[in-house]
Image (cartoon, rainbow, N blue to C red; front, top):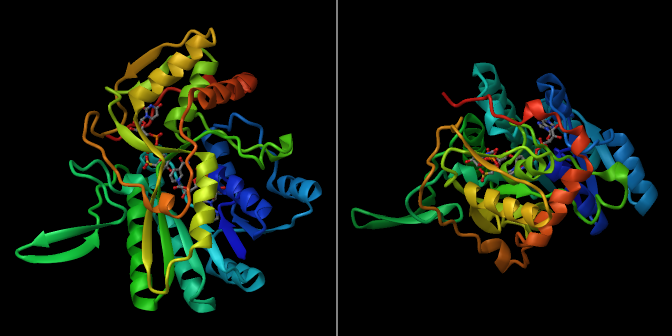
Length: 382
Ligand code: NAD
Ligand code: USQ
């Protein structure tokens, strides 16, 4: 199957492109490299020294004999989208190519507008391109668990059955996102659902939780293939940040009480979930939603787990409760469903002490690259 990975130079996209390539899919990568540009403008860098995209792809070909086509450009530019659709003729499009940081979207008006305009425009362009070139192309879109927020009832997979004044319907699950970034994903979901309903497109929205880890079987073949690992306050995510903080002896930065509970998954499950979605396409006209996470943890629980594993290895790790820079519930009910991907064959890698230990050792290996000034949060929601 011919699969285009939009955002294939990024954290999830690079791991997915190599995984699908090794699994026998014909893979093309589309990326504007804007993420590398944002890192430069913010003065942040990945913990791991990532090589230029063309070097990465050349090395993959040398090692495996497998080609990955590369299209450099911005999916907000419709003629560029038309040109790669014409040249590559995808059967599935996996869309990772968005501004994905909540703090980035909350820096100021400019960053909020940039996030929403880019994310919504790029996604709309893909929908129009699928309609123009081949309505059978399956769109696999990365959404986020954060679209739902933290309601005081169970979170279903995309839809909820509601009884109201004696009548019943299955409706999109209510959304209460927590940042302008998370809101952009809600807008995307609505646009995709509309396109499926009106034009008969087929789409899967993968409402992914927070991803952790860095090693996948394919990116470990060679140092040139190493994936990015973000630890800074803008792009770094909770567990990855805690492991890097532990590696350099920085107190773990729990925001507020730390009772914020989220769905999490190992990056090895991200790539497998995408394969499952691509291999089991949605029906024509169907807008399908899968909650893509494997386990739920509170931020405080994660910090305690990192502390335990680190201390057992002889490290000295403190946990610090910082004033929360975000506006979010710090103690709340959270019970999200995640059975649909398992029903299709996902066998989760659960968070274990050995995985945490290997992530800690990975962070220690690169700890001399850490810029400690990038760790404490400065972007606030207010
Ligand atoms: P990332 O920033 O590492 O990668 C995104 C890639 O997309 C970058 O290489 C960037 O250059 C590219 N890109 C962005 N806008 C583009 C555009 N307009 N045209 C072409 N390329 C563009 O992000 P990631 O962590 O790999 O996340 C990928 C997707 O998964 C995002 O949509 C994100 O919302 C979603 N997601 C990520 C996580 C996580 O924990 N990392 C969790 C849930 C959902
Ligand atoms: N947090 C801390 N300390 C930190 C960093 C974060 O306590 O040092 C807390 C945050 O306050 C929040 C939780 O951890 O309550 C998660 O924050 P995060 O930065 O790990 O993740 P988030 O901002 O939600 O965004 C990340 C990805 C995003 C994806 C989302 C999935 O950057 O692309 O959509 O995870 S989800 O959280 O399910 O919406």
